[in-house]
Image (cartoon, rainbow, N blue to C red; front, side, top):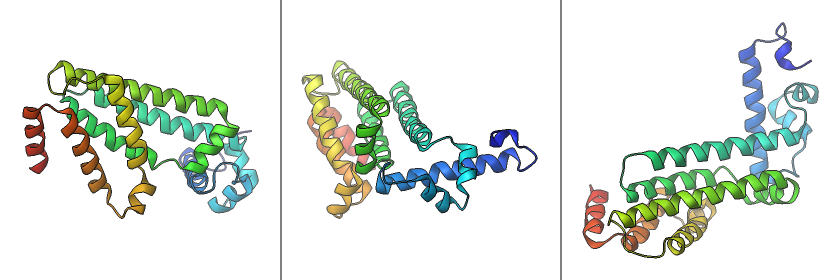
Length: 213
């Protein structure tokens, strides 16, 4: 019998609250220690529940891993697609992509990603496909900027590879902390370097004037 069928013991809202607490606690722990370093006993203790209660909500640790990965990926997919569909300039779209990419990086960690790659190939494949989809959206945005005359004429694939490679290094919480920078400073510097190189001169001046306002 699942927790949802035991309506006499706690309300549905209370059950949802416990479920979300388990999910969030597990996410915080795997961020620090990776998936393999976390046990159900440890999660249950941190949540203040018994192991038996844990199993009323989730049948295994693997279920939680896949649920959290799906949440992060689906959330980012939705945000990137929403940005692309907005009526705004290509440079404004790139600005928003960079911001959302930083937020997403903050939701994962190297120990977590390494364990997913080693022990959860199905989840890792979803991450790989998601990254490819992100790259396609960014490349299309760059193509749109070139067609509209806002961006200089470069090879779109080369520009996209340059952007995504640099972003994975710079828009990283560890990099920012190591170099004693703020999120705002990092994003502004990254965007300015990139867009000053991409934008044609008249649009570059408009962008810099807009940023200064």
